[in-house]
Image 1 (cartoon, rainbow over the protein chains, first blue to last red):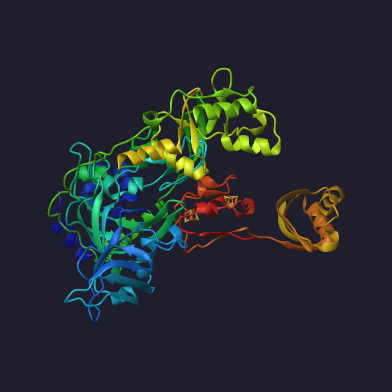
Image 2: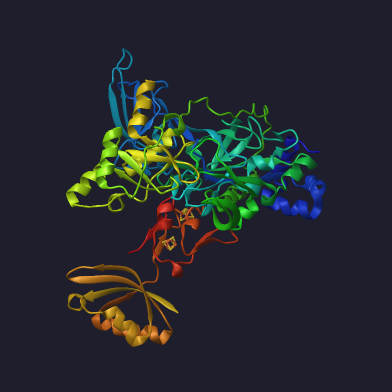
Length: 507
Length: 131
Ligand code: SF4
Ligand code: SF4
């Protein structure tokens, strides 16, 4: 048994034994947890990945005459204006207001530019009062010009992050990177055996051995603190809320990124020292990639509860490929696909190494936590959901491809509809024609349904959320989508009128 | 062996089957990675497969009708920007990107066909494809 005080004394004398969590694995394997606990004083951990829930409080100092800022923009990225006169909070994922710049420059990029010492343009507007007569201000500032720039990240350092794949027949663009169609890749995130919360976890009590409020940490290349549990904290999916001084940070460990067609995010380097106070702590610090279970979810299903495709671990994920059992077109098949990481293990290592060096150099002392992390809570939002089956027009009006164009036109008029799904003898969808197709057939002198129908039909499923179908329609610029069952039989149709009626009725 | 080249043909040869003739006359195999034909000039990126001699013969032959420049690299990665995350790895159709044992993301540059998938996937805009 050791105390943090004793460890700090050793650090000051330059006698502490400090190893990274990776090195600890070997030590415990070779010498056992008991011996490791005897002589190892600190284990350093690290992680480096996309942490969307990050941002910075900035105090700009007062202008002359003073202004009470309400709408605040930094390089065209809006920052929160609901604080006191010259304070703001800029979040990493806030997109640029300028449509020409789009999502390629957001809050995260402003933060990185500040850390790099670059000039950033501040534009702010306010309403005038007796003490704040100024209406707007437009100046260039650097990190040196502002008073405080305090990074406060509400949710960082996830203990485990689920991996992602995609069942759809098209690429999707997610915060886990680009997911290829038909389960053709798996993307994962997280430092696994180097992850701070993972190395400090006690699975029996579902709590953390040493990390708590007041734990001094490595944050973005500077010194920071854990200030509590993060949002959505729910061990073994624990999270941390952390703070640090942006003015101390290093652009190597604070990096702005843009997930393609998703948005901006901040890659944050975060490292936590774990004091090896006893054998139990030593043992947990030897956790390996293969010991950490990672679920793989289907991000192709745009629902909160995504289907679980498989369970794996970080060792398999880091091998570069994985074999999945998946269902494609109703057939169960085995498929070996590539795995790719979204976070950087190389940089996580560098974080753990840097923190280790700080401690060895006597520059960084450990702190005793003042309290444990707070309550675990992770529950879904109570939000209404409308599924396709709630709004679809039934029964479906369909036709077979052997009818004439004239007959098709009559059906459209008789039922006052614009879309006619064409089906085979079993009712399975083979194409669709619209009133526009019929007009075109007349103009171009086409004779048969086969000639004019669209064959690659975008479809919907009864259990799909309406919001998803609305997005499909606007993406493909169409106004109606046949609804099909698992056998591609048409069970109805959903049109943009159905959807607008729905939203119109609600208001 | 394999060699990648940029190839410009002068306008008077645009209507001639220069590439086919090169293949027939020298026995080299050619993959056309890019071709842009305009009235005054044609620009191509070619990949030649064959023995050292056949490739040399092919280059000689091609030089008669235009200008040849060897490409050593198609991908350019900014090592300052790249954090070795790995978002690009699964996007490469020919497995030219992988993670090594030290967790570096490595590009086998000689295999790249310039499809740009990795470039589009990189969250840090660290990849440039030279055209
Ligand atoms: S996606 Fe970009 S930053 Fe990540 S490894 Fe590839 S080149 Fe490097
Ligand atoms: S450009 Fe295409 S082929 Fe070349 S490395 Fe990138 S993904 Fe692979």
